[in-house]
Length: 267
Image (tube, rainbow, N blue to C red; front, top):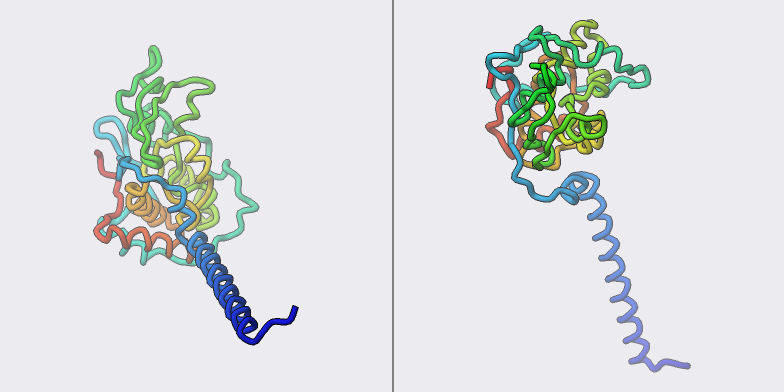
């Protein structure tokens, strides 16, 4: 069928409009992917929470601090971040958990292993097993990573609902300076209450050995404390940060410029 000149012009105009719409859709898709792979990967899956915004380090009267490689200086977390060495992570292919000593030692010499110390510190209404002043049997956790309230009950299947997380994961620490520490210093890092928090089991598994560039707590109210705690641990044990990790930490701290370092003072 032969088109008249007016019909041909209308067809060309409709074709141009269609290409404009396709180009706009493509640009929107590219922008959306860019957002997702920067900050959207966190925001897209995070419902608002009203969970805790901080977590204790020590408990007065029965819990002792660990002598880290150097004390954490009091002051601005952002300022301390700027003192940390920035470089790429070392290889992780030679990482072995045993390099950090036996799990849950009694490094503070209070008579109880570290796991039970942290459970006792972080749970509300902690109860102990029969004839034990150490083994925590039950309690309630106002969980900081998700903002949920979790009931802890010791048992073969139930204990894993609450896990003890290394705020600076040991795998991450190994890649960023821990290989240069002594065996005793690595044991201290793995058992230091500054680096340990009782958390939701699935959230802990999701975090794995991630740093701040690849994982942050879904509970946004806790992120400033979490990042400040990571910075404090890394400063205490002479660990470094990767470039992307530092950028992620700075973005979090920009929302709380008054955030202080986390020091091992009794709560």
